[in-house]
Image (cartoon, rainbow, N blue to C red):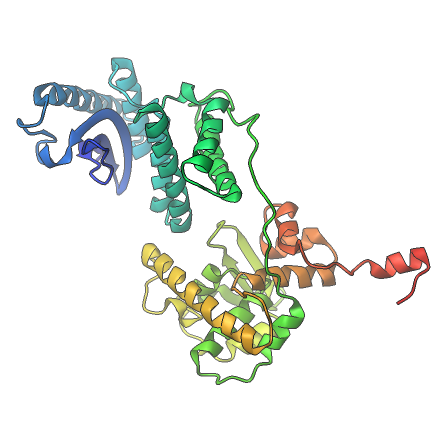
Length: 417
Protein backbone atom coordinates (compact mmCIF):
# COMPACT_ATOMS: atom_id res chain seq x y z
CA UNK A 1 0.00 0.00 0.00
CA UNK A 2 1.30 3.45 -0.89
CA UNK A 3 2.31 5.72 1.99
CA UNK A 4 3.35 9.36 2.20
CA UNK A 5 5.52 10.99 4.86
CA UNK A 6 7.61 14.08 5.49
CA UNK A 7 11.37 13.66 5.82
CA UNK A 8 14.31 15.97 6.32
CA UNK A 9 17.31 15.63 4.05
CA UNK A 10 19.95 16.23 6.71
CA UNK A 11 22.79 15.50 4.27
CA UNK A 12 21.97 18.82 2.56
CA UNK A 13 22.59 21.65 5.01
CA UNK A 14 22.93 25.29 3.99
CA UNK A 15 25.09 28.00 5.56
CA UNK A 16 22.37 28.66 8.15
CA UNK A 17 22.36 25.03 9.24
CA UNK A 18 18.98 24.29 7.68
CA UNK A 19 18.02 21.24 5.64
CA UNK A 20 15.23 20.80 3.06
CA UNK A 21 12.01 18.94 3.85
CA UNK A 22 10.68 16.52 1.24
CA UNK A 23 7.51 14.52 0.82
CA UNK A 24 8.41 10.86 0.49
CA UNK A 25 6.16 8.43 -1.38
CA UNK A 26 6.74 4.71 -0.85
CA UNK A 27 4.97 1.90 -2.67
CA UNK A 28 6.02 -1.74 -3.10
CA UNK A 29 9.69 -1.04 -2.48
CA UNK A 30 9.82 2.00 -4.79
CA UNK A 31 10.33 5.52 -3.48
CA UNK A 32 9.66 8.91 -5.03
CA UNK A 33 10.23 12.36 -3.55
CA UNK A 34 8.67 15.78 -3.98
CA UNK A 35 10.72 18.79 -2.94
CA UNK A 36 9.03 21.41 -0.75
CA UNK A 37 9.92 25.05 -0.34
CA UNK A 38 10.59 24.46 3.36
CA UNK A 39 13.87 24.26 5.26
CA UNK A 40 14.28 23.43 8.93
CA UNK A 41 16.95 22.83 11.54
CA UNK A 42 17.49 19.08 11.41
CA UNK A 43 18.31 19.00 15.12
CA UNK A 44 14.79 20.26 15.87
CA UNK A 45 12.95 17.85 13.61
CA UNK A 46 10.81 15.02 14.95
CA UNK A 47 10.76 11.97 12.69
CA UNK A 48 7.89 10.43 14.61
CA UNK A 49 5.61 13.47 14.43
CA UNK A 50 6.95 14.66 11.06
CA UNK A 51 7.16 18.25 12.22
CA UNK A 52 9.58 20.61 13.97
CA UNK A 53 9.69 20.85 17.75
CA UNK A 54 8.24 23.83 19.59
CA UNK A 55 11.68 25.33 20.16
CA UNK A 56 12.23 25.73 16.40
CA UNK A 57 11.92 29.34 15.20
CA UNK A 58 8.48 29.93 13.64
CA UNK A 59 7.49 26.40 14.65
CA UNK A 60 3.74 27.01 14.48
CA UNK A 61 3.89 28.52 11.01
CA UNK A 62 6.17 25.78 9.64
CA UNK A 63 4.10 22.96 11.13
CA UNK A 64 0.90 24.51 9.82
CA UNK A 65 2.34 24.61 6.27
CA UNK A 66 3.59 21.04 6.54
CA UNK A 67 0.23 19.87 7.85
CA UNK A 68 -1.45 21.35 4.76
CA UNK A 69 1.01 19.52 2.52
CA UNK A 70 0.32 16.20 4.24
CA UNK A 71 -3.41 16.77 4.07
CA UNK A 72 -3.25 17.54 0.36
CA UNK A 73 -1.06 14.48 -0.27
CA UNK A 74 -3.42 12.14 1.61
CA UNK A 75 -6.36 13.62 -0.28
CA UNK A 76 -4.69 12.95 -3.63
CA UNK A 77 -3.86 9.39 -2.56
CA UNK A 78 -7.45 8.77 -1.44
CA UNK A 79 -8.76 9.96 -4.82
CA UNK A 80 -6.53 7.48 -6.60
CA UNK A 81 -7.75 4.64 -4.43
CA UNK A 82 -11.42 5.55 -4.89
CA UNK A 83 -10.97 5.75 -8.65
CA UNK A 84 -9.53 2.23 -8.55
CA UNK A 85 -6.46 3.23 -10.56
CA UNK A 86 -3.46 0.95 -10.88
CA UNK A 87 -1.28 2.58 -8.25
CA UNK A 88 2.44 3.07 -8.78
CA UNK A 89 4.82 5.32 -6.87
CA UNK A 90 5.22 7.53 -9.94
CA UNK A 91 1.46 7.87 -10.44
CA UNK A 92 1.00 8.79 -6.78
CA UNK A 93 3.75 11.39 -7.11
CA UNK A 94 2.22 12.97 -10.20
CA UNK A 95 -1.23 13.05 -8.59
CA UNK A 96 0.10 14.68 -5.42
CA UNK A 97 2.12 17.20 -7.42
CA UNK A 98 -1.00 18.18 -9.31
CA UNK A 99 -2.96 18.66 -6.08
CA UNK A 100 -0.15 20.61 -4.44
CA UNK A 101 0.24 22.83 -7.48
CA UNK A 102 -3.49 23.58 -7.47
CA UNK A 103 -3.39 24.43 -3.76
CA UNK A 104 -0.28 26.59 -4.06
CA UNK A 105 1.78 24.33 -1.81
CA UNK A 106 3.93 22.76 -4.52
CA UNK A 107 7.58 22.95 -5.32
CA UNK A 108 6.93 20.69 -8.29
CA UNK A 109 8.13 23.42 -10.64
CA UNK A 110 11.62 23.40 -9.16
CA UNK A 111 14.29 22.31 -11.63
CA UNK A 112 16.77 21.53 -8.85
CA UNK A 113 14.34 19.11 -7.19
CA UNK A 114 13.70 17.52 -10.57
CA UNK A 115 17.43 17.04 -11.21
CA UNK A 116 17.97 15.71 -7.70
CA UNK A 117 15.43 12.96 -8.31
CA UNK A 118 16.83 12.17 -11.76
CA UNK A 119 20.27 11.71 -10.20
CA UNK A 120 18.91 9.54 -7.39
CA UNK A 121 17.19 7.44 -10.05
CA UNK A 122 20.55 6.30 -11.40
CA UNK A 123 21.49 5.05 -7.95
CA UNK A 124 18.18 3.18 -7.61
CA UNK A 125 18.87 1.52 -10.97
CA UNK A 126 22.33 0.48 -9.76
CA UNK A 127 24.11 2.75 -12.26
CA UNK A 128 26.58 3.84 -9.60
CA UNK A 129 29.23 5.29 -11.90
CA UNK A 130 26.73 7.54 -13.68
CA UNK A 131 25.18 8.44 -10.33
CA UNK A 132 28.49 9.67 -8.92
CA UNK A 133 29.38 11.65 -12.05
CA UNK A 134 25.96 13.26 -12.37
CA UNK A 135 25.72 13.99 -8.65
CA UNK A 136 29.01 15.88 -8.81
CA UNK A 137 27.73 18.11 -11.61
CA UNK A 138 24.36 18.59 -9.88
CA UNK A 139 26.09 19.74 -6.70
CA UNK A 140 28.22 22.16 -8.67
CA UNK A 141 25.16 23.60 -10.42
CA UNK A 142 23.27 23.90 -7.10
CA UNK A 143 26.25 25.73 -5.62
CA UNK A 144 26.19 28.07 -8.62
CA UNK A 145 22.50 28.86 -8.15
CA UNK A 146 22.96 29.55 -4.43
CA UNK A 147 26.10 31.61 -4.97
CA UNK A 148 24.95 33.69 -7.92
CA UNK A 149 21.23 34.03 -7.19
CA UNK A 150 20.95 33.31 -3.44
CA UNK A 151 18.25 30.75 -4.15
CA UNK A 152 17.58 27.14 -3.22
CA UNK A 153 14.94 26.73 -5.92
CA UNK A 154 15.04 27.28 -9.65
CA UNK A 155 11.74 27.46 -11.56
CA UNK A 156 11.72 25.76 -14.94
CA UNK A 157 10.84 29.05 -16.63
CA UNK A 158 14.16 30.48 -15.37
CA UNK A 159 16.11 28.11 -17.62
CA UNK A 160 17.46 30.19 -20.48
CA UNK A 161 20.75 30.47 -22.43
CA UNK A 162 22.02 33.26 -20.19
CA UNK A 163 21.71 31.05 -17.10
CA UNK A 164 23.85 28.29 -18.59
CA UNK A 165 26.38 30.76 -19.99
CA UNK A 166 26.72 32.14 -16.47
CA UNK A 167 27.15 28.59 -15.17
CA UNK A 168 29.92 28.04 -17.71
CA UNK A 169 31.70 31.19 -16.48
CA UNK A 170 31.21 30.04 -12.87
CA UNK A 171 32.90 26.71 -13.68
CA UNK A 172 35.92 28.49 -15.17
CA UNK A 173 36.34 31.41 -12.79
CA UNK A 174 35.07 30.12 -9.44
CA UNK A 175 35.69 26.37 -9.69
CA UNK A 176 38.86 26.69 -11.77
CA UNK A 177 37.78 23.86 -14.06
CA UNK A 178 39.58 22.88 -17.25
CA UNK A 179 37.97 23.28 -20.66
CA UNK A 180 36.95 19.63 -20.95
CA UNK A 181 35.63 19.53 -17.38
CA UNK A 182 33.42 22.53 -18.15
CA UNK A 183 32.27 20.86 -21.37
CA UNK A 184 31.38 17.70 -19.46
CA UNK A 185 29.35 19.68 -16.89
CA UNK A 186 27.40 21.44 -19.63
CA UNK A 187 26.68 18.14 -21.37
CA UNK A 188 25.32 16.67 -18.14
CA UNK A 189 23.11 19.72 -17.55
CA UNK A 190 21.93 19.45 -21.16
CA UNK A 191 20.91 15.85 -20.41
CA UNK A 192 18.82 17.03 -17.45
CA UNK A 193 17.18 19.70 -19.59
CA UNK A 194 16.26 17.19 -22.28
CA UNK A 195 14.72 14.89 -19.67
CA UNK A 196 12.66 17.80 -18.37
CA UNK A 197 11.46 18.58 -21.89
CA UNK A 198 10.58 14.93 -22.47
CA UNK A 199 8.41 14.99 -19.35
CA UNK A 200 6.67 18.18 -20.48
CA UNK A 201 8.13 20.37 -17.73
CA UNK A 202 9.90 22.65 -20.18
CA UNK A 203 8.65 23.80 -23.56
CA UNK A 204 11.77 25.48 -24.92
CA UNK A 205 15.36 24.34 -25.40
CA UNK A 206 17.78 26.71 -23.63
CA UNK A 207 20.89 24.98 -25.02
CA UNK A 208 20.14 25.83 -28.64
CA UNK A 209 22.82 28.53 -28.81
CA UNK A 210 25.18 27.23 -26.12
CA UNK A 211 28.62 26.10 -27.26
CA UNK A 212 29.96 22.99 -25.49
CA UNK A 213 33.64 23.60 -24.81
CA UNK A 214 36.23 20.96 -25.63
CA UNK A 215 39.86 20.67 -26.59
CA UNK A 216 41.93 17.79 -27.97
CA UNK A 217 43.40 15.45 -25.37
CA UNK A 218 46.70 13.71 -25.87
CA UNK A 219 45.86 10.03 -25.47
CA UNK A 220 48.14 7.05 -25.17
CA UNK A 221 47.51 4.46 -27.87
CA UNK A 222 48.63 0.87 -27.56
CA UNK A 223 49.28 -0.91 -30.84
CA UNK A 224 48.50 -4.60 -31.45
CA UNK A 225 52.26 -5.15 -31.76
CA UNK A 226 52.73 -3.78 -28.24
CA UNK A 227 49.89 -5.99 -27.01
CA UNK A 228 51.89 -8.89 -28.40
CA UNK A 229 55.00 -7.84 -26.49
CA UNK A 230 53.04 -7.78 -23.24
CA UNK A 231 51.58 -11.20 -24.05
CA UNK A 232 55.01 -12.72 -24.72
CA UNK A 233 56.58 -11.61 -21.43
CA UNK A 234 57.84 -14.52 -19.34
CA UNK A 235 56.34 -14.13 -15.88
CA UNK A 236 55.18 -16.48 -13.13
CA UNK A 237 51.66 -17.58 -14.09
CA UNK A 238 50.42 -17.66 -10.49
CA UNK A 239 51.56 -14.10 -9.72
CA UNK A 240 49.21 -11.12 -9.38
CA UNK A 241 50.81 -9.39 -12.36
CA UNK A 242 50.10 -12.45 -14.53
CA UNK A 243 46.50 -12.46 -13.32
CA UNK A 244 46.10 -8.84 -14.40
CA UNK A 245 47.67 -9.67 -17.75
CA UNK A 246 45.04 -12.39 -18.29
CA UNK A 247 42.22 -9.92 -17.62
CA UNK A 248 43.79 -7.46 -20.05
CA UNK A 249 44.38 -9.97 -22.83
CA UNK A 250 40.89 -11.42 -22.50
CA UNK A 251 39.47 -7.91 -22.84
CA UNK A 252 41.53 -7.34 -25.99
CA UNK A 253 40.68 -10.68 -27.62
CA UNK A 254 36.95 -10.20 -27.00
CA UNK A 255 36.88 -6.95 -28.93
CA UNK A 256 37.86 -4.57 -26.16
CA UNK A 257 35.70 -5.46 -23.16
CA UNK A 258 35.64 -2.75 -20.52
CA UNK A 259 37.07 -3.62 -17.13
CA UNK A 260 33.61 -3.47 -15.51
CA UNK A 261 32.36 -6.09 -17.98
CA UNK A 262 35.35 -8.38 -17.44
CA UNK A 263 34.75 -8.11 -13.69
CA UNK A 264 31.04 -8.94 -14.16
CA UNK A 265 31.55 -11.85 -16.54
CA UNK A 266 29.85 -15.06 -15.40
CA UNK A 267 30.16 -18.54 -16.90
CA UNK A 268 26.62 -18.28 -18.22
CA UNK A 269 27.85 -15.52 -20.55
CA UNK A 270 30.10 -18.03 -22.35
CA UNK A 271 27.91 -20.28 -24.46
CA UNK A 272 27.40 -21.68 -27.94
CA UNK A 273 25.50 -19.60 -30.47
CA UNK A 274 23.01 -20.89 -33.06
CA UNK A 275 25.92 -21.88 -35.33
CA UNK A 276 27.45 -24.01 -32.58
CA UNK A 277 30.39 -21.64 -32.21
CA UNK A 278 31.25 -20.67 -28.64
CA UNK A 279 30.72 -17.00 -27.92
CA UNK A 280 30.90 -14.43 -25.15
CA UNK A 281 27.50 -12.80 -24.89
CA UNK A 282 26.95 -10.13 -22.23
CA UNK A 283 25.22 -6.87 -21.35
CA UNK A 284 27.59 -3.91 -21.10
CA UNK A 285 27.59 -2.32 -17.66
CA UNK A 286 28.03 1.20 -19.03
CA UNK A 287 25.21 1.28 -21.58
CA UNK A 288 23.11 -1.85 -20.86
CA UNK A 289 23.45 -2.76 -24.56
CA UNK A 290 24.02 -6.43 -25.39
CA UNK A 291 27.19 -7.49 -27.19
CA UNK A 292 28.20 -10.89 -28.49
CA UNK A 293 31.40 -11.97 -30.24
CA UNK A 294 32.93 -15.39 -30.96
CA UNK A 295 35.76 -16.59 -28.74
CA UNK A 296 39.05 -16.46 -30.63
CA UNK A 297 42.11 -18.54 -29.75
CA UNK A 298 43.66 -15.80 -27.62
CA UNK A 299 40.56 -15.60 -25.41
CA UNK A 300 40.34 -19.39 -25.19
CA UNK A 301 43.95 -19.59 -24.01
CA UNK A 302 43.18 -17.20 -21.17
CA UNK A 303 40.11 -19.20 -20.11
CA UNK A 304 42.16 -22.42 -19.87
CA UNK A 305 43.64 -21.07 -16.65
CA UNK A 306 40.26 -21.11 -14.90
CA UNK A 307 38.03 -24.01 -13.87
CA UNK A 308 34.52 -23.55 -15.19
CA UNK A 309 32.05 -23.16 -12.35
CA UNK A 310 28.29 -22.82 -12.02
CA UNK A 311 26.54 -20.52 -14.52
CA UNK A 312 26.23 -17.76 -11.89
CA UNK A 313 29.89 -17.95 -10.80
CA UNK A 314 32.33 -15.22 -11.79
CA UNK A 315 34.80 -16.19 -14.51
CA UNK A 316 37.58 -14.04 -13.07
CA UNK A 317 38.39 -13.58 -9.36
CA UNK A 318 37.89 -9.81 -9.53
CA UNK A 319 34.42 -9.91 -7.95
CA UNK A 320 34.84 -13.09 -5.95
CA UNK A 321 33.01 -13.09 -2.63
CA UNK A 322 30.35 -10.58 -3.73
CA UNK A 323 26.85 -11.57 -4.78
CA UNK A 324 25.65 -10.37 -8.19
CA UNK A 325 22.75 -8.56 -6.48
CA UNK A 326 25.08 -6.43 -4.34
CA UNK A 327 25.41 -3.73 -6.97
CA UNK A 328 27.05 -1.02 -4.88
CA UNK A 329 29.58 -3.43 -3.37
CA UNK A 330 30.35 -4.69 -6.88
CA UNK A 331 30.84 -1.16 -8.17
CA UNK A 332 33.25 -0.32 -5.34
CA UNK A 333 35.18 -3.57 -5.87
CA UNK A 334 35.52 -2.85 -9.58
CA UNK A 335 36.85 0.64 -8.94
CA UNK A 336 39.41 -0.74 -6.51
CA UNK A 337 40.53 -3.59 -8.77
CA UNK A 338 40.63 -1.38 -11.86
CA UNK A 339 43.10 0.93 -10.12
CA UNK A 340 45.15 -2.10 -9.08
CA UNK A 341 45.07 -3.48 -12.63
CA UNK A 342 46.33 -0.19 -14.07
CA UNK A 343 49.20 -0.22 -11.58
CA UNK A 344 50.34 -3.67 -12.72
CA UNK A 345 49.76 -2.88 -16.39
CA UNK A 346 52.26 -0.03 -16.14
CA UNK A 347 54.76 -2.52 -14.73
CA UNK A 348 54.02 -4.91 -17.61
CA UNK A 349 54.55 -2.12 -20.11
CA UNK A 350 57.88 -1.21 -18.52
CA UNK A 351 59.06 -4.84 -18.71
CA UNK A 352 57.97 -4.99 -22.36
CA UNK A 353 59.92 -1.82 -23.18
CA UNK A 354 56.81 0.23 -23.84
CA UNK A 355 57.29 3.87 -22.83
CA UNK A 356 53.60 4.65 -22.37
CA UNK A 357 51.24 5.09 -19.43
CA UNK A 358 49.27 1.92 -20.10
CA UNK A 359 45.82 1.49 -18.59
CA UNK A 360 43.13 -1.14 -18.99
CA UNK A 361 41.02 0.93 -21.37
CA UNK A 362 43.85 0.91 -23.94
CA UNK A 363 42.94 -2.69 -24.74
CA UNK A 364 39.66 -1.37 -26.14
CA UNK A 365 41.39 1.20 -28.34
CA UNK A 366 43.86 -1.38 -29.60
CA UNK A 367 41.09 -3.88 -30.35
CA UNK A 368 39.08 -1.22 -32.19
CA UNK A 369 42.08 -0.34 -34.33
CA UNK A 370 42.98 -3.96 -35.11
CA UNK A 371 39.36 -4.72 -36.08
CA UNK A 372 39.20 -1.64 -38.26
CA UNK A 373 42.46 -2.52 -40.03
CA UNK A 374 41.43 -6.12 -40.66
CA UNK A 375 37.69 -5.67 -41.32
CA UNK A 376 37.86 -2.29 -43.05
CA UNK A 377 34.22 -1.53 -42.28
CA UNK A 378 33.78 0.96 -39.46
CA UNK A 379 30.06 0.17 -39.20
CA UNK A 380 30.83 -3.48 -38.42
CA UNK A 381 33.53 -2.46 -35.95
CA UNK A 382 31.02 -0.18 -34.25
CA UNK A 383 28.72 -3.19 -33.72
CA UNK A 384 31.58 -5.32 -32.39
CA UNK A 385 32.31 -2.66 -29.78
CA UNK A 386 28.66 -2.14 -28.88
CA UNK A 387 28.72 1.53 -29.88
CA UNK A 388 25.47 3.34 -30.58
CA UNK A 389 27.07 5.47 -33.30
CA UNK A 390 29.99 5.37 -35.71
CA UNK A 391 31.22 8.66 -34.22
CA UNK A 392 32.00 6.84 -30.98
CA UNK A 393 34.06 4.28 -32.85
CA UNK A 394 35.95 7.01 -34.70
CA UNK A 395 36.97 8.50 -31.36
CA UNK A 396 38.49 5.15 -30.35
CA UNK A 397 40.68 4.85 -33.43
CA UNK A 398 41.56 8.54 -33.64
CA UNK A 399 45.29 9.07 -33.31
CA UNK A 400 46.45 5.78 -34.84
CA UNK A 401 48.48 6.10 -38.02
CA UNK A 402 46.27 4.69 -40.76
CA UNK A 403 48.29 2.91 -43.49
CA UNK A 404 45.38 0.86 -44.79
CA UNK A 405 45.06 2.96 -47.94
CA UNK A 406 48.77 3.49 -48.63
CA UNK A 407 48.83 0.96 -51.50
CA UNK A 408 45.95 2.74 -53.21
CA UNK A 409 47.82 6.02 -52.88
CA UNK A 410 51.06 4.57 -54.20
CA UNK A 411 49.28 3.00 -57.17
CA UNK A 412 47.51 6.24 -57.99
CA UNK A 413 50.56 8.48 -57.67
CA UNK A 414 53.08 6.11 -59.20
CA UNK A 415 55.24 5.91 -56.10
CA UNK A 416 57.03 3.00 -54.49
CA UNK A 417 58.29 1.91 -51.08
